[in-house]
Length: 178
Image 1 (tube, rainbow, N blue to C red):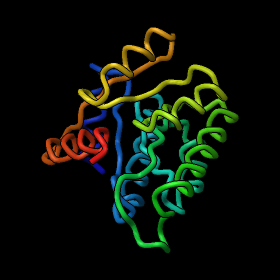
Image 2: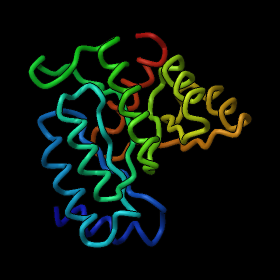
Image 3: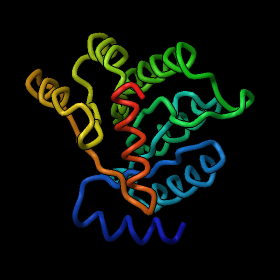
Image 4: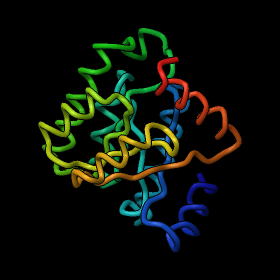
């Protein structure tokens, strides 16, 4: 937690939002606690948290993040998790993603759709209007250009950390149907 707080204070001078995410259920609670602690220190408007739609815990996590006023980056969830912790990939996760996106929009929360699933993204943009979309650098660049041309706010992000390359390659492969 002290590391996130120090990094957030330094980064707040240079960028709008520091985005923090846990890629799996095992880390979700610890990361959420850190995010909420930093938000409680008056930096909620400078902090974002990733919420994985596939996790059973996510509706409760979103309630806590909404209360804290933290920007939410909604993702499907990339890792296979035990059935007692997460929904299976496919329709159950897609439905959860749609429900959570509608919940965030209804709450007028600061959030972004972070999915490379074009059908899901387009359905939500049609239903909710031009909500912000996040795309990984190098994944479907034509989509980014199309969204911008249509007036959809787009944030292109790059991963950070010691596993950034593995993360980027996995997302790139997924976007190509691997």
